[in-house]
Length: 98
Image 1 (tube, helix red, strand yellow):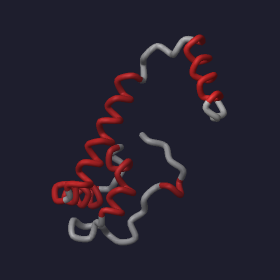
Image 2: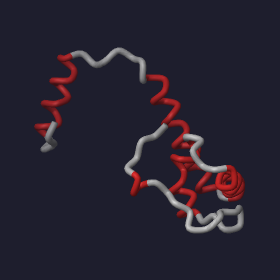
Image 3: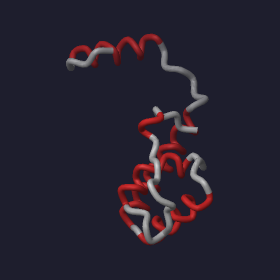
Image 4: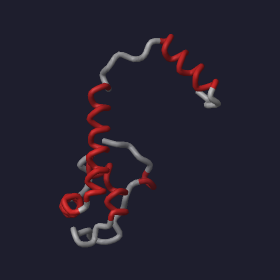
């Protein structure tokens, strides 16, 4: 499950249907859709929207691929202390706070 602050979660102001789900609403609800957190009606509306909208479908596919990549590396060995120190140093040199 993706953990976002409550204010960042998409909230439908009306019962979504395939005809009423805008790209903006689809993008706002995409993480919840990918996490399986939408109710049945919203899920059906999202699936219909994705079937009809190439741009949102491409965004969905990218987000799903990202989640797949995270899933593959989540159990990987942590970076060595030497690597972390090197990355921290490079970030500081480029003006980022580590």
